[in-house]
Length: 147
Image (cartoon, rainbow, N blue to C red; front, top):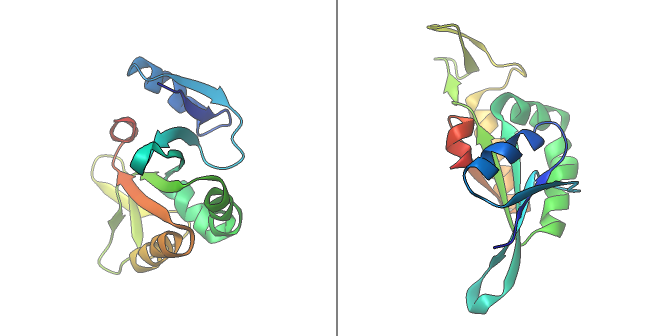
């Protein structure tokens, strides 16, 4: 089995130890695009490259706001990988006005930094899928993401 390649920068490298504890062969390296990459096999045994951009929900909203995901990361992944995924970790919560929210304390909520509405968020996610072939996956916790 070939190793999962995990980007050695902040935000990605923290995934290495949990992946290895799960028994997966993984190693740190510098990836130009994406946070995790691995080789796969397609129809007829064709070699494929798979890339995953891993973001926490607030980070994803921030990268939508700055244009970094659409301007640099997604186009680079399109050129680098045969299959591309945007894996976002965090509960997507919103209030009755459609503002994205985060849990604060046990029962409280506060607006998610970036001031994005739920409709805008899903429009941007859909744009990533249509324009760059970045399939959207979302989990509630890092543990769920690792599984």
